Length: 136
Image: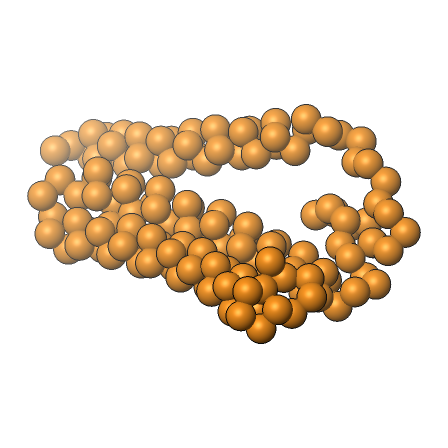
């Protein structure tokens, strides 16, 4: 394979990743731009770039921060699934790269499942068994 062909192949991979990132970013910005003027927060909440966060009640504050954390974990998990899929698609029979991509996908799915089951576990324990106000 000539030097130009190897360079072109590498550039195709980079352009494919950049194009995918641009598509996902444009989707995220379009979703955010649906409501460009945020609604004012209530008196017991504080306005942030990520939305209104409760400040009067600690339980609601923690649930707001937990929701932001779940959103971040989901976003990073999806990014890792995409990266793992890229490694699998571009492995071309290279077993090491194929295993690397599969492990990216597997650990991203495990992380997402742990985050979701952690949320469900807290809702069941705190809301239905311990009956803590603000949960469930």
